Length: 164
Image 1 (cartoon, helix red, strand yellow):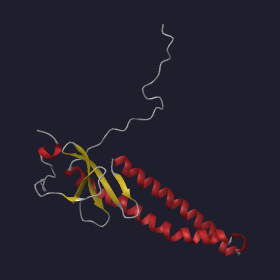
Image 2 (cartoon, helix red, strand yellow):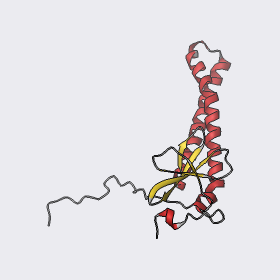
Image 3 (tube, one colour):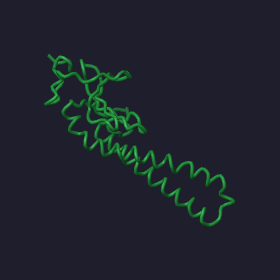
Image 4 (cartoon, helix red, strand yellow):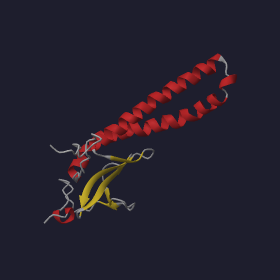
C-alpha cells in the first residue's frame, strides 16, 4: 500500500468549464431567448440607476427623516434588493446558455465560436435586429458577418472554421 495520499485531479470539486463553440445557426436560434434575458438585464440596470441616487439621498438624511420618508427608504432598499436578485438570475441564465455578457448597460453579448481555428464570437447588442457581427477573442474590432457564411443555414464555411 502506498503512503501517498489519494488526490483528486479537481480537488475543489468544481466542474470543469467546457469550451463552447456555437455555430451561427445556433446563435441565431438562441437569439429570441437571449433578447428576452438581455431586456431584463437592461431594464434592471435602468431601475437601479433610478433607485440608487434616491437610496443614497435617503441614507444621507436617515436621522432627519419623517415617517413617510423612512418608510420610502425601506421600500427603496427592498426594491433594490429584488432588482439585484433579478439581475443575478438573468446573468446566470446567460452564463448557463454559454453566452457571455460583454456590457450589462448596453446589453451586448457574445456567442463563443471558433473561426480559422481561433477563439472568436458572434456579437449581438440590445436593439439590433439580429446577429450580424463577429470578432476574434481579445479584439475589439467588430467585423460584419460575410454573406458567404450561408445566411439561410448560418453555416460558417469550413475554410473559416479551420477544418478541411
